[in-house]
Amino acid sequence: MHFVFMGVSGSGKTSVAERVAERLELPFAEADAFHPEANITKMSAGVPLTDGDRWPWLRELADWIGAHEALGESTVMACSALKRTYRDVLRSGAPGVHFLHMHGPSEVIWGRIAAREDHFMPPALLRSQLETLQRLDPDEAGLEFDVRGDLDALNAEALAYVSGQLRSAQT
Image 1 (cartoon, one colour):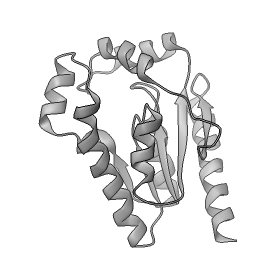
Image 2 (cartoon, rainbow, N blue to C red):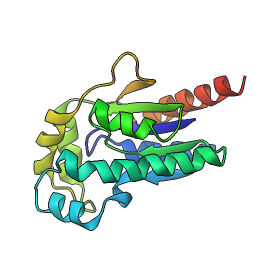
Image 3 (cartoon, rainbow, N blue to C red):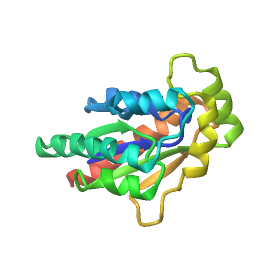
Image 4 (spheres, one colour):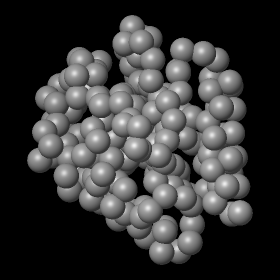
């Protein structure tokens, strides 16, 4: 099984995903690390990515999932996965992709992203991401997580979900 922690920048998807992957000893990928330099340059300049910018990046992420599927390994990934069509590309990498949507009020997310110093995406692009975001459809495997609470509680909730799905798949 494959677990994609999704949401807008600043939602905490990477922080939570890394902890879950570490705890369960699963391979982890930060989708931002797969962006070509042209995408990073564009975002750093405050220019939102287009779908055309995203398709090759998303296919590379789907390939990463597929490569681990071929090895029989479950994975954890942090990726914005803002639209259903983007999630469809990620699902093309392997069956059993679940999305853990990290969401919360925009003012909470704004505060988090504005406080970050070590990320290429400026806070100005958050509005574009919020406008693009499509919540999970009922037929998409996954769950939404409210990021307003305590980080330890959020980590525990996400870990319980992933662990439960892995246990279910083994039976």
